[in-house]
Length: 127
Image (cartoon, rainbow, N blue to C red):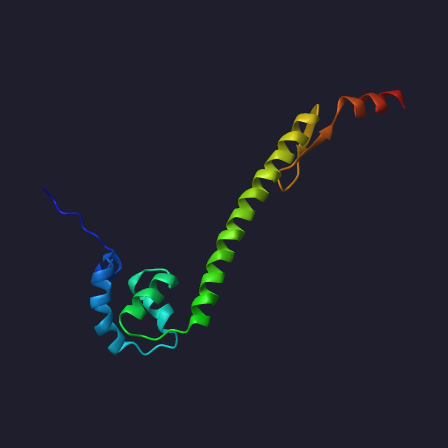
């Protein structure tokens, strides 16, 4: 049986206990500005996980920074949900508008149809 060649570095495939044991030697060589972000990038974890694991290795991280990261994470989730809702609403309006048109002449650059309804056509014929 042939082994798969995994190109992802082992440090990014490791579990929590493996990362914590590797973190001790990584901390000695790290000389960046933001240790949480550096840990997050190096081991491929999110910022909240990095904060938790760094605290387990003895690094002190302020509660204000953790609150800021949590708020940012929650804001991203809320923005994602709002975007989903907005696209659902836009699609609903688009479908309703398209079904009201009896003759679609074309589409705008944003993909919205334009045309006329039977009522508009009848009023133009009478004029």
